[in-house]
Length: 266
Image (cartoon, rainbow, N blue to C red; front, side):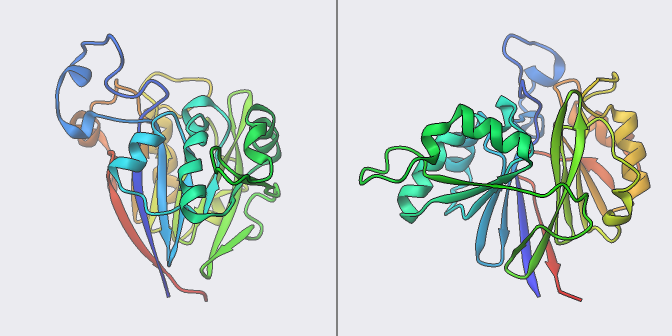
């Protein structure tokens, strides 16, 4: 049996919360559950430490949570709020004296390798930049696992994110579905038996590349994880107000939330 510990480093949308220049009730109060950095997670799987996305707040998230190491990164897509902290992986490369593998679907990997080409050069003696290796994940919609980390399988799904394509992941019995506007019927059979589902929930108003509150509630009730947490929320999702509206076994996530799940191979 392998223990999986997931820490929500950030559950905010691309603007974070508070939003610069905004004085709404969410942005102007000091409740820590309404202070949201950009969406990402850190996962300890047995002895290994993995990251989901390295957004624009990654430097501060890594310091605040005292992340000890990173053995690999699962990228959802290449938008700035999920990627642009990639340069700060160099501190972990230096500490570990090794390259860090990153994973994603072909569109994401091609985008990263083009924009951050210097990160894929051979290491030098100074370790003054990230040293990464890129691995494309197959587009098999969960038909079989694509990685195995400490005896825990990782399944990969592609979901539409407006005109983009985003990757969603199931790691053991924890699933991370952010930045999407639809879940295809073929995916649902692979989401049975989840302990935790982390699900995009941008705001009440329908949006072309994210789930609205109503859509998120619908998918959460359809998937029936033991516990669902909503992520990638704008400042229009005040924590306590949203929590009062949530279906059974659902609630908003918050920065610093920690969950644990044990996975045992059948």
